[in-house]
Image (tube, rainbow, N blue to C red):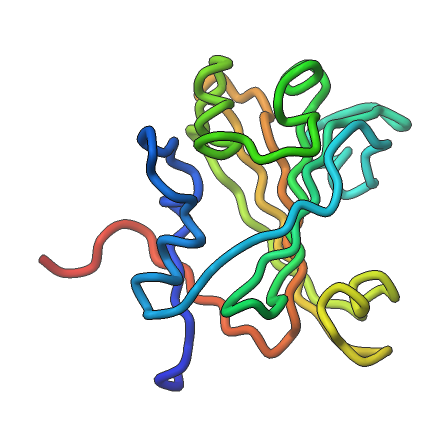
Length: 181
């Protein structure tokens, strides 16, 4: 692993934020002397893509709330992050509105009674779509990694499916819990 490898922990992205605390990505980037940011590209109701529909256990044609964001590092795009919520969870909430959600989605979900207790992540590779190439500044035919993260409550209720798309050169390392003392 090179010295430039970005090792990230999933847990901070699943924990509600304290009042006034920045988002997990900006905090992680700042710890490395970098600037993390995001731009909201879309928020609202859409038909669930097949992979999301299957992950959330929804019937064909079911609609969901999406929050589509372009993730930036030092002002440059590094990832597309699309978070999908069942209508039963997010309809009529700030998640469906095209504006920043104070404290982030995880904090709002907790306020709504949805706390993630189980997370399953699945990584696949494929060719970037034309839209992905445009957002990420990739050449046509570029490969990407797609990480699908499904969060469920302690009762097994699927509450969020996030599909993150990143250039294939990204190094993914998963760390569970703290290493060492």
